[in-house]
Image: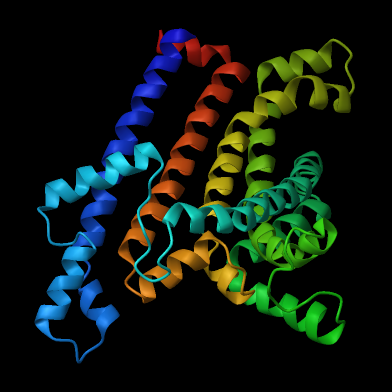
Length: 315
């Protein structure tokens, strides 16, 4: 197990280095001058050059990269060009919206997908299975932002059960969770459709194994065999999807946050791109990439705990 962890940690570190280089270079080659954008079209070249020096945009490319990376390691994400406050402060304010939203959506997705996927596998080729898979296919096909607008029309405008957008703050946790409910549902249902299909497919593959037939031959009932033997072995690919979904929900909720006017990390990235606030975009995207890579590392370790064969294969 220690060698397995060392190998995965090395892979994590190399992935972070590669990601930081790619993010920095992509942001650097984006057309447009942040200083010129901030000063306006009528700014003189001298004023733009002065602001560029003040923002630290005039140094060599390699120096700016290492300055940025060393700042990240110290927890210093730089100062926002637009907001004139530390980027770490902006991230700290926004992450307490994006992170609960991602966890809320992931919980809803898992609670929906697990029983639905198991039921579809147990009732294979029945009307129930066909109906569930048809609904899952529809859930995958429908864009989440379109579904979000339908939720707003129904529950906000027609029924008036929820607000159409905005965030109430965490002073009242119940009101805050209510503000996140429609966005979480809009994010969760497409992911639940994917997870249900993977759960069904994985469980059907496991139910066809020889050890499942042996368990049934020993006298275990269908449900005992399912819960004691099949379900745990079917969870390995499902864990992969859950981890990837959390990464997507945390990093890919830009559209949903804009539909519901949620001041989260996704909306912060969108505002940073539109205002050419490059330090915000670089730092937030790097943080989201770090979250994705760490989640992938946790999934690999979970694999090794669930299936010892992976540890033996690594050795």
